[in-house]
Length: 258
Image (cartoon, rainbow, N blue to C red; front, side, top):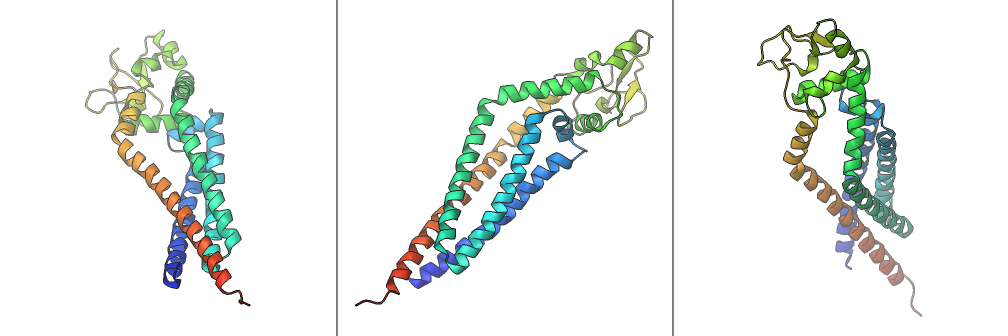
């Protein structure tokens, strides 16, 4: 391989690893967001779901490893260190295999994950009082996604407070489910509100349907991002291997001939 090709490969690999470093920072940031966020649906899940907590820590680990690999790849490319390039190739291959394995497991375990989410959400709705972080996160989801309950508003009839007040002839409903287009009492963001009639002024669609519709409408973008990441990783593997072999060839030409 000519010196011009080697130089081009070296700087392409450096640019790739810079992007890979940024990509690792994004993954680590997402994992930290899952752990620390208290304003979204993630809060509803990670307070009760061990699987999501473990997944978040795995994301933080992968992101940190990706940042380290990006740094080592940049160093190995600029200074043409063969052992670093080979180590970089091996680690990138292992990460790609791990990502494919994780995607396959998520696909085949999707029904189990859906059941776990349903259990967590129903538990929150049954004991809901509107006073803790996970309940506020669930309220936020219902307001922004314009949905009510997991499968529908009827899920809220199992709430302890709503059932107890129903015996006292007081009709309550979750304020975050309130549909603005239906007349009723003043709109509040959290807690339980008084209903003027047995027919609640709430959204009729369950949140699972809304979330599934959102995923379906954005599946092209999600799939494109996943494929793009895989292609970038394959490109990095190819560039690192080409540069590693080129460096080895260059070293042999520098050996004196007798």
